Image 1 (tube, one colour):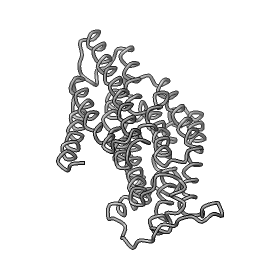
Image 2: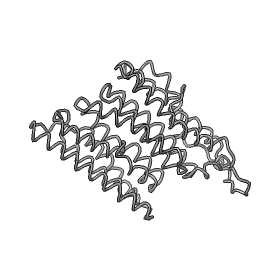
Image 3: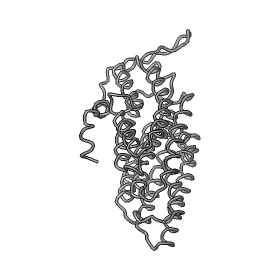
Image 4: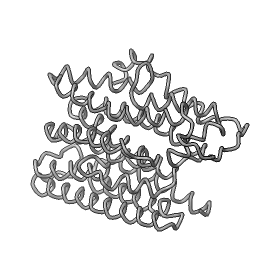
Length: 346
């Protein structure tokens, strides 16, 4: 892609995100979401492969529908209450439509079907943007409207997301699809707590972005797109593979790694809200996700290819690990000791 074009698209992404997260008026928030969608489309379709064009088309149709629903929800609310302020969303029908719209934007179950397909048709770096930066504006809108939303509906969608994200990721062999289902599963954890403690949702989102960025950049550095390639990648960069093992376990939420922190705090908060059964269900469902993270970790570091035919090993490279991956990995593994600070932050 032309560097000038890439600069324009990245700037537009930053502009769209900034407009949405800093606006109080629904029309401005909608404008930011539209700028974001239009900026990411050329980045998805830049390879001109039919799969990439298909992904861009699916992404455009879903996001356009979700944006129309956001506009419809805000107009219904303004019609009934005279309020265009984002925090003043009080009409029940508007709240329901907005929940649907944001779920489509985020890829939250049952509106998640587009997300794995779009991620599979994109490059790893574009997939990283779709999994992290593109989710920031919608989750900010969810954060601002959280007092008005229906807790039972959000809890049901959250449990469904965690279940489907874990269940559908089990038999995948494509790395990008596995990361897509991982994202859907994590969104379940964020959504379940947003009505009770919205700041905890944002903390979970920030840590999810940190860990997902580390994993995507590591895969990109190793040029890995599917599990059979991952099995032979250890010859190319052994130290990076060892780091990947720990980062995947952190993403799965195992103590004493960073990924355990948001899960721990969310389970604690749900228990305080007399929702111990919900906390138990979502914890058990996250074991499904743990299985495919362990499978990735197993393929990355522990196994050789499971067949007797000659298999092409990749050349070992002495290229040093990039500074960004080193810093992100350290943070993805070692932030659990800051947990006593969290109550003062949130």
